[in-house]
Length: 56
Image 1 (cartoon, rainbow, N blue to C red):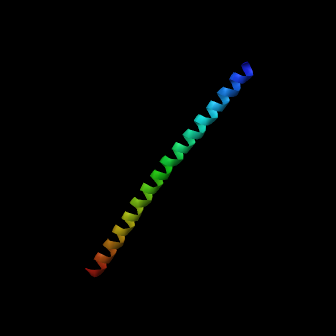
Image 2 (tube, one colour):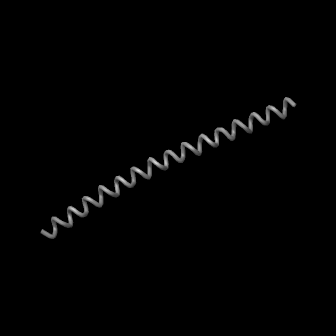
Image 3 (cartoon, rainbow, N blue to C red):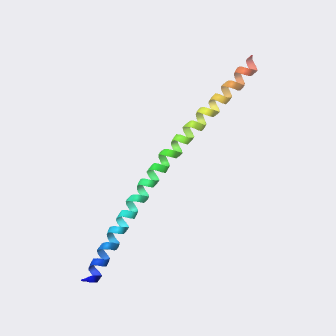
């Protein structure tokens, strides 16, 4: 009986860990995408400023 309970607890813990890891990966992906978008916007703005100053 004790062994079965331990096995069930271990299985539940494994499932919880897998779910948490998946959620963390999703959040990290969203953060990385947001950072990349911000970096792209900053690079485009820098290029626009450079072109603007070169023209002026």
